[in-house]
View 1 (cartoon, helix red, strand yellow):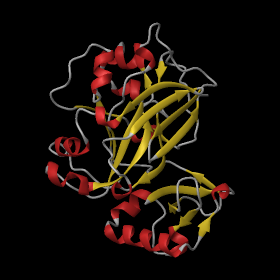
View 2: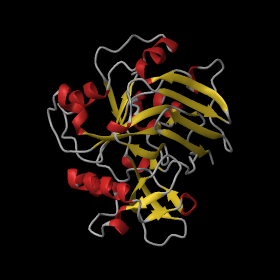
View 3: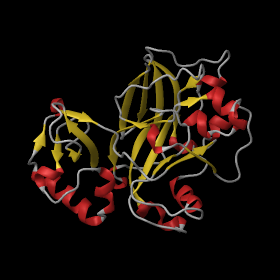
View 4: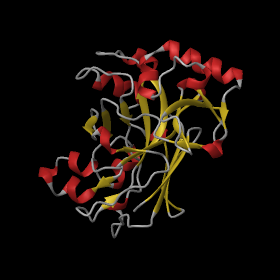
Length: 289
């Protein structure tokens, strides 16, 4: 299934959870199908199997379809408790910066307030002159857990989506004691979308093409088979430290081709259009303003 969070283009009805009939097609409004359904994805995921079963029935029914032209897609999840990020998690990205392959996952965070929609603008902050792109596979936790075993970890995933881990390299690499948080956490620095694609709808999440285009030119082109620590390992690792909750977002790292490691470095400027694509999941397209 392709789960989405949306609002009607006219603005009536507020935020809704829906199921896409297929990528880019009409969306079934779950609350119209069953008024007991909540209005946000986080609340929907907290319902567990009951919510998923309702979504399956709604999809089968073909009823309460909102035409794509009448839908404004939002980030599939808003207001998560956590946004967990993984650094240096692609072999080819380590090679481009002559960095050793990590022996254990490198974990950092973005504040949830960074999250923005799949087609919303990225706001260039006046405080940074070195804003960069990072296409990433993201996943969202579907049920609560702590000390999760690697072999059970995928059952804790609600689905996968596309992320852009927008990064202010001056703040990440030179300022703030070289702690990454501030450089990663300006408003709008985490576009997500277009949909939350359930694990069963993907053939092999660890063998998907991953691309980033800036103004139509490919700048990143790799495959999730380059990931050093896969989804299961990341869940098992992070859940040693914190309880994972429905709606928590994980960004799993970026492949090579980021602007900072080009010669000379290239950074985003106003008017640039950044498109992040992952096979079978879809693409997000954000204009820099």
